[in-house]
Image (tube, rainbow, N blue to C red):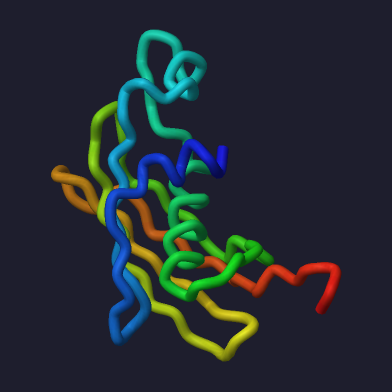
Length: 124
């Protein structure tokens, strides 16, 4: 899943509040064949993963999701749609609270709040 989500990342930029990013979920993604047959949708877990992947790029380090504090999905995202993520990051390294809003051409599609933590290697 991570590789699929990263393949959809088209831009990421650090902002004073956190970061912004865009993802385009191309119709060629394998996930669309099973979610749902005849009515393809981007799975909610892909949108959560998009928030994490963009945060990793913005902070220059691998991050783990320690907790999904809140996730509200208000519109469907289908094949070929572009989703813009704008997120605030608060806290101190190695942990942040991430409050993200995801939007498409149709408006807000999700609000996701995560607790992210630096991924520790075996050498830490």
